[in-house]
Length: 68
Image (tube, rainbow, N blue to C red; front, side, top):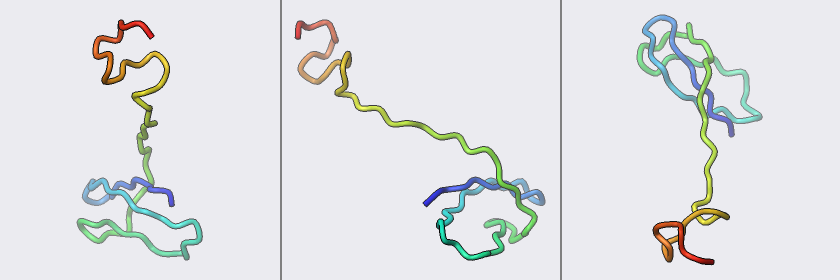
């Protein structure tokens, strides 16, 4: 389920909402002041990366310069 970030236009509170794909038409409101005057905003995201991939130093070679 996607998480959307909203900002309240009345109190400037920023909050996230978990919205199901088959969600019914629900009126969302600010979690702080209860206003329905909210707007979807840009939400940054990150991509995880494995620390054991090629070129990474594992626990057996802490400096990363050990022979393979």
